[in-house]
Length: 330
Image (tube, rainbow, N blue to C red; front, side, top):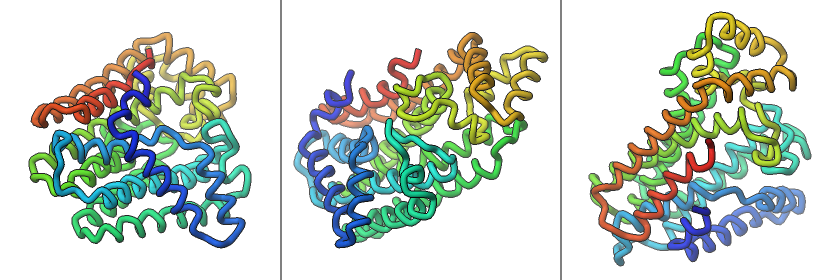
């Protein structure tokens, strides 16, 4: 199923998010800042995070009229997307990435100094929107998730090149840097709607499991997809020294000589030939199926979290969105 079909029940709200995003990045009167904002908006991405926030609020009330403030819902949906955009801008600096979504990254076009400052600027706009919602619970939800995200990213950077990294350590890193922010998107939507603690927790857990599955598959795609599909150079994680689940699984299933060969390749300044060798070994071993199966188990757990919600198109869209994570990977 295409994202446009999944998003159809909230198409109006997502259009409003686009308008808020544009307004947020075009408030400055400085021409250079306006140019940067326009550049960021040229490649919209999938808008998963605002969609999760809106769908969670709507699914929690089964689409019935409730006490949710629509403007606040759009504000927080915009804020979580701005946080994501800021994180991507900073990530490209950390990874020395030259491409993002099929076009030059901000750091490739303007340099690291501008990228870091722009990321900080976008973060500040996000928190301005959250503050305008005047909800201490919402502010705590977003700020705690952002703290976890930054801690997870920092942990990953500090452990780059560590071939002794365990699966448990990997899962802890992605839980903080990816799953917690996704969980916060869903939780934030239910906070705006003032839903019961049980409903809030169910959707928070949905977002957490969704996030784990998403990151595992994202790491998998980074290794096996082509540049035209990814919109950036494949193997960026390997080049940066990140030890991801696909790599860990390959090391687990490989025989002693192959395992040592992979480690030797990872220790090198990885070039195109080394990447292709690791990619081929991953695809032609059980590691690919095992990695996707692991992600699928988290997708299943995410969908189980929706069982207590009333039937609605919004709940269905959350289910379809969970399945979308692993769609087409094999």
